[in-house]
Image (cartoon, one colour):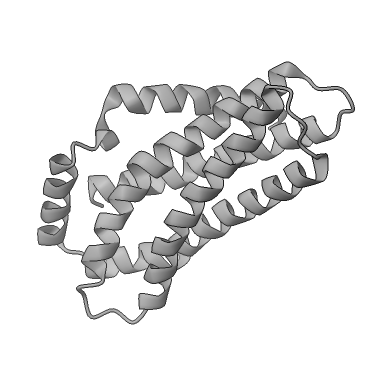
Length: 188
């Protein structure tokens, strides 16, 4: 298995864990009548992760791969187009979520139903995207990309100076993920 592909698979596992932790934080926030500043702070940290790592590192690498796949004689083009469109939707939705929660953190009035609705829509979009890629995109990657394709993708990743494999950047977000999913481990 190619190292980039392995990283994408690992990222999806980590993102799924972050989404689960994020959902639990939202349940904690919405389940209280008083506002817990620690929960809100963790929600903002999780949103930072979602606004930086997937949108700045993970999705651009996937976009390189998707463009390469579209040059192959594949039959599942619609799934690729959908995934590309979802990358843009996720970036916009993440910005919207950040704006809403930073407004809450700054004591602006945000209706609970608006916050809950946006949060539910966001979680659904993120999970739907990961599911689409795992079920329809990743099998095509395995089937159609060869060593020459991976060599070209590696060159492109290096050209854009993507810190996709920068150990320091990965450690920051892995530490955050580990911290946020820690309560989940205690329950298991």
